[in-house]
Amino acid sequence: MEKGAAAMSSQHHEDSREDTLPHIMKFNPPVSQQRYQTMVNLVQKYQAKKVLDMGCGECSLLRLLKRKEYIEQLTGVDQDGDLLQSSRYLAKPLLCEYLIPRSKPFTVSLYEGSIGEKDARMLGYDLVLCVEIIEHLYPDTLAAIPDVVFGYMQPRVVVFTTPNEDFNVLFPDFTGFRHWDHKFEWSREEFQCWCDKVAKDFSYSVSYDGIGPGPSGTEHLGCCTQMAVFTCLLPPHEGSTHSDDRNPYNLVCEVNHPHRTETMTREEQILTEATYYLQRMSRSLRRSEADEEDAPTGDSSDVLETEKDADEKREFSISLETMMKFSCLRRVCPSVEKLREVLSSMEAVTLSPDGSSVTYSIQEEDSSDSDFAAEDENDSDEPQTVEETPPLHQDVRVSWQQEESWD
Image 1: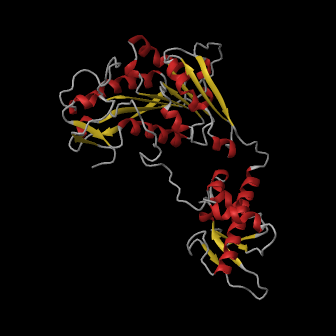
Image 2 (image 1 turned 180 degrees about the vertical axis):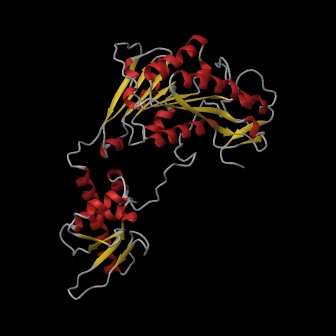
Image 3 (image 1 turned 90 degrees about the vertical axis):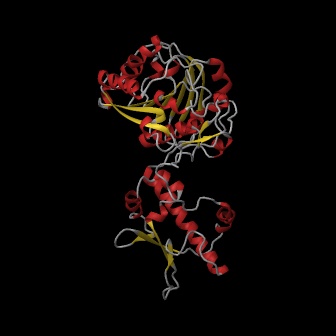
């Protein structure tokens, strides 16, 4: 069965209306988690620096997005002020963020307000997420969305998700809506008709997708959740440039997270990190000689030690691709090409003729080695395989209590 797809089951689900159904459709992982992970993947795809979650509720999605280093402003808006007050602790930094601060400023803000109202503080966002919100709106608020979100705010990307009414036939003996607060549920045709008109009226392109596929043989019904991704067709400088003092939203909290004040240039940062790892591997190789063990930094294809020459000079070679697997170097260095450019100015290393690897001398033991011994033994920053886009369920590790698995 396809990952994330539904299966029929007789097992009941706690705190869900599915408890009333004789044969329950179950999703693995639950559709709510699939939606959140899809949003995380989209934020990563667009590398959005300013992200706004409209209808953030208990801030479950914000909790996941807080982990993303490239986000500089993360904002949640919801009409339920009491719910935001009870969730405001999620805006605060974790203890580890004080120990290892971010490399850039990062602010988390929570506002009490309606998506149907214009607020000047909501201008300038790269990505606006509207996850399962429109079906909860009364007609007047729904009618205001196009002008507020697309006409006034004009973010670079907007994402809407909503239940797919076509999919409801798969729930046995089902009547009404999936949630007591839903005012409507749209078929795919109705949703796409609304989205197409919005895109045409406000110079956006729109693409459609689904979240939570049903059992095999139900593909014609679409997925449990339908999604539209809008992309602004206007050049960035023609985006949201309004300047006014409209501030109807109530600020619940705003938290500035700790970050490092960087004084070095990007090239100096790359050189510092590259030198650190080369010295670290040099120490590891020297210790392994003494212990007659293999180097712990990778397999034989990653680090190759050369033969000793007449002057007892010992060297090792490592590919630039392998060096880029170290997370701290990867944070400051965008590509292998940039690493090659920086290392070419470093006297202590020699680039291979094809520029794919460097040769570095194994340093003799000195008094500073003892300072690094414990660090090397406990350092977990070994080369790791980098995934461009995480699998659907990888980032979701939170227990979603009191939340429907398919609403």
